[in-house]
Length: 188
Image 1 (cartoon, one colour):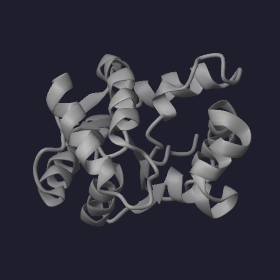
Image 2: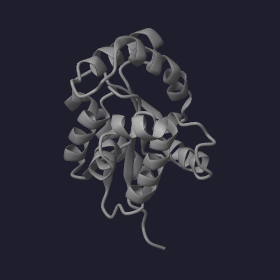
Image 3: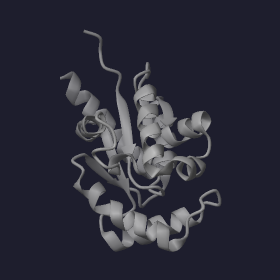
Image 4: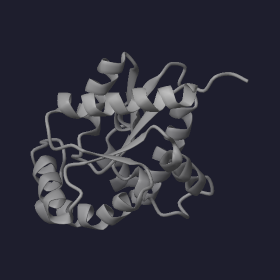
């Protein structure tokens, strides 16, 4: 039986630092880095444009299909940043989604990133980060509503959690230590 390729899956809301920390983590581990949003934009185009043309459910179905394609071809250890809403899609989105979501959640190397494990500080940090991104068309009210809706879903995930309240280097170092420990556990 071939050995499974290790993949650290970073989940969390937009603005949680999945890409920034993920790039640093991949460098520290000397692993590849893949960002599902970047893959989506390179294959499908602008995410906001896709949502406008096909609705959020249409975008989510396309993103799920892309995740299936992308994650099935990892040939080297990889740090993989999933899209912000990936773990919050409706369970009836696609017949495969519930199982895929469960597999991501149960994976020993799945990491939830949040700036705070308390609602109000998390909302404020995420909204501030999202509004600082010039390429996002959001506004304070929509960004705040999104994180308020998704926060309980993220907090209910049964995966390891890391606070992203330090520098990307500090957070990536903590996660790298965790990954190395988990990798050692699986080889014992």
